[in-house]
Length: 99
Image (tube, rainbow, N blue to C red):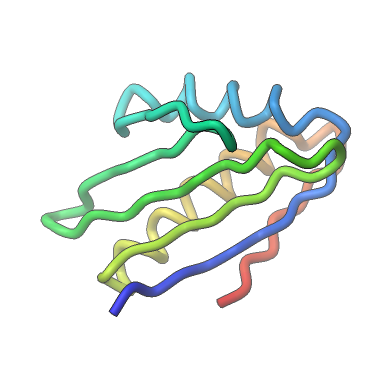
C-alpha cells in the first residue's frame, strides 16, 4: 500500500523554488523532469520515497510525496519541507503536510 503526503505552499514563484530544491537535493536524490515539475526519488536505507514538485499552478507549489514505507515517506517530507522553508524564509514559506 502506497502512503502519501501532500502540501500546497503559497508562493508567487513555484517554478523557481522547485528548480532550486531539485538542484540542491539532486546531489543526493535522483531528479526527473516531468510535465508537472521535478520529481525527486531517494532510497532511504532500502526504502524508496518520491516527491513530485508540481509547478502547474501560478501561485502554489504542490508537493506530493509517496512511499511504501512510512519511515521513508516521513524522511522525504521532512527533507523537502525543511529545505523549502529554509530557502523561502524571507518570503515566509510554510510547509504543512497532510495525509
